[in-house]
Length: 282
Ligand code: ATR
Image (cartoon, rainbow, N blue to C red; front, side):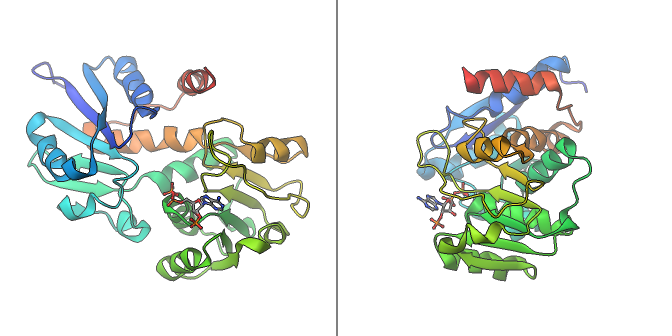
């Protein structure tokens, strides 16, 4: 890649943004690949979103990742949105193409699935029912990814049942919406549970979920990664279940973004994972 005339530039847009761990991840890849580049956290107020997006190409950005609260708000300002992002209903990554066009995609589903596959190579989405807790943006990506991998039955539990019903409607067959009051029983006979709510995240309430009906072999996964081990994961680990935190979902989205931004896929290494874990624990 010949770029001696300019810095390679990418970033993440959000509001607030300074808590994001993605700059550490992407700047590590610039360094490891001997590239002169920077990945910058861009604090973009919602009222400045359109102007910020219009500025990406002229400023020389290859693109940006998109986080809360912009994942849906960016859509009207994009020239194309991938089919996956349309179905999920959110954009997590924008490519500012050399011709100036802005292309939106969603790498959350891929990041989630890849993390499971790398950590548990024998895992199969169609091996049995899966319970997903939560029906926000994270849940839509997780459900989309699971269905794309061949999941046949997803029990989708949410406090507001109508949001689970909307996902079942939008993503098609295989999803059964389940009321919040039935979440404990919804774990009976499943091969996997995924928490996609913010419950258990630092500063938030705990997720109240009784694992009594859960098989000891079932994989328990959380998309939260601060803390690395939520109370849900700790409880599951102590009763012998395999567990997976949300850090890998963040890590495994990165290579897809780099593919469109810079034409290469950097590696998710143990060294990189340890670097982020240390920063989260610190
Ligand atoms: P994201 O886009 O990150 O997934 P979100 O769209 O705000 O975030 O979704 C947050 C999820 O956490 C939702 O499923 C939400 O439930 P509701 O749809 O009923 O709001 C869930 N959630 C947040 N706080 C909760 C609480 N105290 N009890 C139960 N669920 C909660």
